[in-house]
Length: 304
Ligand SMILES: Nc1nc2c(ncn2[C@@H]2O[C@H](COP(=O)(O)OP(=O)(O)OP(=O)(O)O)[C@@H](O)[C@H]2O)c(=O)[nH]1
Ligand SMILES: [Mg+2]
Image 1 (cartoon, rainbow, N blue to C red):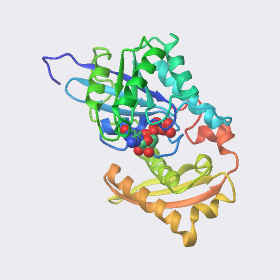
Image 2: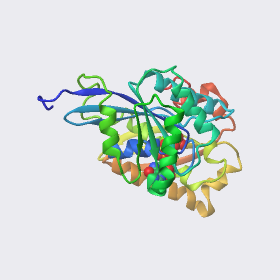
Image 3: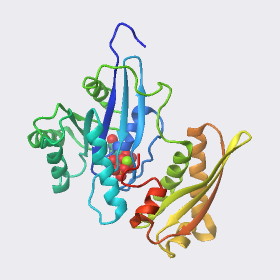
Image 4: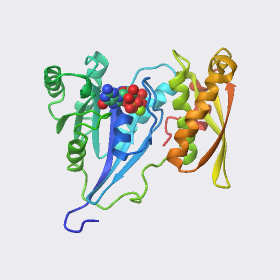
């Protein structure tokens, strides 16, 4: 720890509509795939900590599920988890995707954070600037300033390319309380290896399936056992309908095999050990609307 400068530490909730790039930003800052990322909305389903520590600060990012409307219990729980994270954080980062118009839902979300119910400093992040020209960005910045004039800053970034991310980190740090680290400086996430395994498998399912299928898919780790120089993992993929099962398996089992190979490669990288991954599929028509099953999967409304 640098003795000449004061240390700052605190929590930062990453908030926004689905698919704006919250998890991408957190992963970029942490330098590891702590939270899975896909082009599909509603990828993140629970609260995930990404801990960044250097000589001057510890920034504890709280990645949250995208705030959206949805009728199932899973959707309601996801939104509740996001708002609960906002209430507890020291700083709120409210993200949006500048490649998409600021629609009614996005405006309502900004207004909700601007309405004074939550008093923590807010920073608006306008993400994906690598995809828009400057002349499009300026009017957008002004629009957001008008919707929330009380925010501390409005920062255009590209989470994917790392543009302006250091400036954002500096801005965030300036609002963190002066205190020592909250977590062990060697930690970079609160997720267990078992949770990472479930998420890495789910990421590959999301990337290889289309339409409504991913949203009705969950992954349950039945066995996670360290053996010799590696780990044996048995994972069950829950699908919402009998008809999804052959689609996930694919012709001659090719799709499921691909899911397994890519998830295993990603896991070997982040866990730093040899992984043997066995995948099973189970049909469960209502896991996403069943409070008990959601809790068992770590997706209850009060899941941490
Ligand atoms: N071009 C571009 N794409 C980005 C950027 N940041 C994120 N993306 C892409 O946007 C998509 C969504 O990214 P995520 O990080 O999963 O978004 P999220 O906000 O966590 O989404 P949910 O978990 O569903 O709420 C992915 O395809 C990312 O690669 C960026 O700066 N530029
Ligand atoms: Mg996410």
